[in-house]
Amino acid sequence: MLRYFLKRLLSLIPVLIGVAFLIFTMMYFTPGDPATVVLGDQASAEQLAQWRAARDLDKPFPEQFGKYMYRLVFRGDFGVSYKTGRNVTVSLLERFPTTFLLAIATCATAMLLGVLLGILAANRQSTWVDSVLRIFGMAGVSMPIFWLGLLLILWFAVDLKWFPVSGWYGPKYIVLPAMTMGLTFTASLMRTTRSSMLDCIRQDYVVTARAKGQKERVITYHHVFRNALIPIITAAGSTFGIALCGAVVTEQVFSIPGLGSLMVNAITTRDYPLVRGSVLLLAVSFSLVNLLVDLLYAWFDPRIKAQFTGKSRKKRKTGEETAHE
Image (cartoon, rainbow, N blue to C red):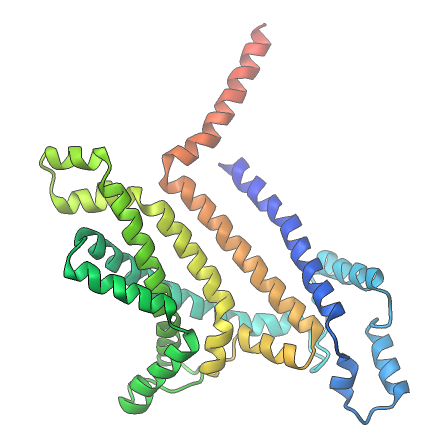
């Protein structure tokens, strides 16, 4: 497993280099001049040229990208913000914990409600409970996040005054944003859990367990749910990754000072170093979440784990046989 982990970890390097190249290329060829945005329309041509030269923006694309990758790989330096002049790494480290906490709360809400409702729908298949939950699932998947966020603000913040409307000053401020994204992802997780549970319920080992007289609770959680975990883990990992990236909209609706709002402001002001740093940080986070999901596969499913341990044993056995010969 250690070998598999290292192999998967090393495979992230070309992926992240490709992401960095793609982001840099897109920003390089995007129409518009950041010098004009920062200095204003009143700046002279000489001032604009000096500003570009100070940031190597007058250099050809290969030279700019080479210097960017050298600073990023060997110094861990994302550059300096065009707009504020602050180090991009410092700005990202200030904003990322807020977005990460919001993604954790969103994923916890979606996992708790989605898995429980999915199990309930599978156990009540073809009943009115199953029908209601399936309608809820379709409505949740189809509902735009910003619209749901505005509805929750009107109900729970304006009318009932249970939670604050916007901002980020304490635990109460995380409830409505987490509910907004969590309810949307709950529907998706519920549908995945229901489908996976129904596939396992029809298997022969479940019929055998019922024939032996085991309790329904034991069959559901020990035989069915455990074997239905792989698709659920996949959906949960995707939920966390999408929550990190999808926080852009939610942070705007609730005025949360996270990575999403920072990235939107950077795009509008053509602050290229800040945009590149934000997107690359999200890409790294998403890649690490996928790596964790792959490791959980092997943890929960012995068949996947056996693929790697089996290969190692086979190689060792082949080596011993060759040595004897």
